[in-house]
Length: 471
Image 1 (cartoon, rainbow, N blue to C red):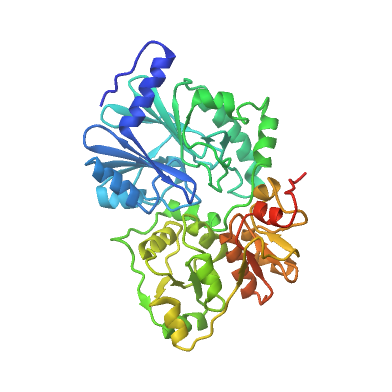
Image 2: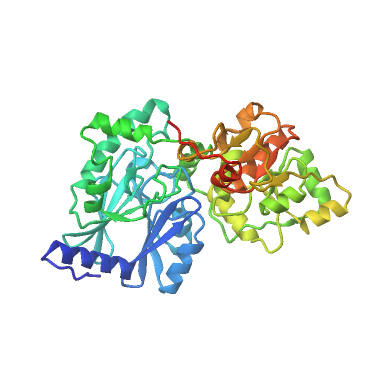
């Protein structure tokens, strides 16, 4: 495929690149993980997939709409926040897997080094070594002739930031941050009209500013990215490392699983129905019940000891943060909840010990004479004016919190359950994380927990207070 690009004014060149993206690039956004994968229509019935997750439903749907076969699957790096779908595409579509040779993947692939190019049938893909987020990180520059269309930057240059450099351990964090400094500056030397297509975006725990857009250009980033504005390498390192918050525990094990290659699947794995006796047996043998129903349903009645993780785009994040992947899991679902969604979110982060779901849900559990538990759920107006536990991320807390609130991030609460004061009101942004936190405290033996269904601002207004910001 040859793309007609202007050789004249920069404004026209940018228009041509935007037109190419509109016609040939399909972003596949996972709002829950905060990531974007991409499907590139190569114009001849084939496609290139970049950084696609193990859950390939969106990629396959996009390919079917355009009547495309996915011929290439490129991964910019060994992902820590999801299992790659590249191995599956190799099996299903006979796709050529394009990855860094330095990543030492243990499955069939074409290993690329800095400067290597792949002919895509008119367009070309050039590998650029951009270490920092990981050692073996590549960015992929998409070219038509000598013209740079765009660059898939993975976890290197992202919108108004760069991805975190602490995933390989504290002893390597600064070293990788310094590598990231040079990688970003290498990318910044590309023409300003070059489109930037990152993987990590808003909502990613691999570090992206809240509310940021998902794509950009080199020119926009030279103007807006504070890391590219850093006057020197030391300033860059200080800014980048100062922006790093906590990240889910499961990140520590997925890179190696991606190096070995996730297991190939033959379809959507089943989530069979379980009767109440099977669920009790699972609990007796050390298994865990995860209740994915809405907050109000869990509050009204749940299996004692169940972990509340309401089904949403963020389900996988909290599952991977709060439970080990070795624990057998049974799920309590509500009416019309999508069992396939539970399965795919779990499998995408490597959770495969899914025993099944409670057939007929909580009504069947109660009808069998089993004990149930409840959790007090209150509106801001009905909430007491006592100890207030804010389980949001530190950055959210710093942006505005109830005066006197104690901040214990949800991801760290298991280790700090004893620090929650007696008679505590647990709160987050709206109530979902707060209910998860309450279920953790209840599992630790607490019976004096109340959950706020509302925002910090609503609570503050109802109690005649004004939000504070962290100084």
